[in-house]
Image 1 (cartoon, rainbow, N blue to C red):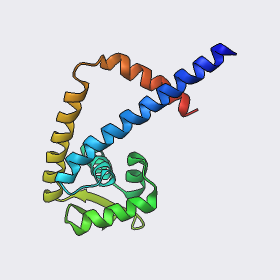
Image 2 (cartoon, rainbow, N blue to C red; image 1 turned 90 degrees about the horizontal axis):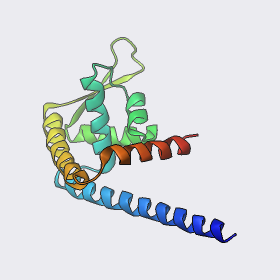
Image 3 (cartoon, helix red, strand yellow; image 1 turned 180 degrees about the horizontal axis):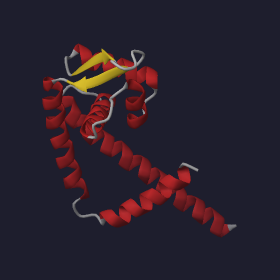
Length: 148
């Protein structure tokens, strides 16, 4: 029984540490995005648009929602706000008029690239002295278990 309690405490400590690290990473990311007047969800959607654009894929709302892991209603709201700021364009699909195709405007592309560079610098600074291969391996194992 004593071993069980000790393992429970260790796992609780790991959970708490992961929660704290996630909160701290999100806080640092948010500080950078505040400079660009972007929310984390907006940045995640811009990242998804960039991903699909770079892979020559059709950029439609449903795919953005899935890629950014944001529910479709929130995705729609985020896209509307990005469009109001002239960072994206939304147009009815030419082939399937039920779909809405999304693309970055020039202003959106410039803002996203600048924000992405600052985020990447932050990541490089944070992860520079870590064994990234070992950390990635452990996180992938954990992620696989959580997705089962």
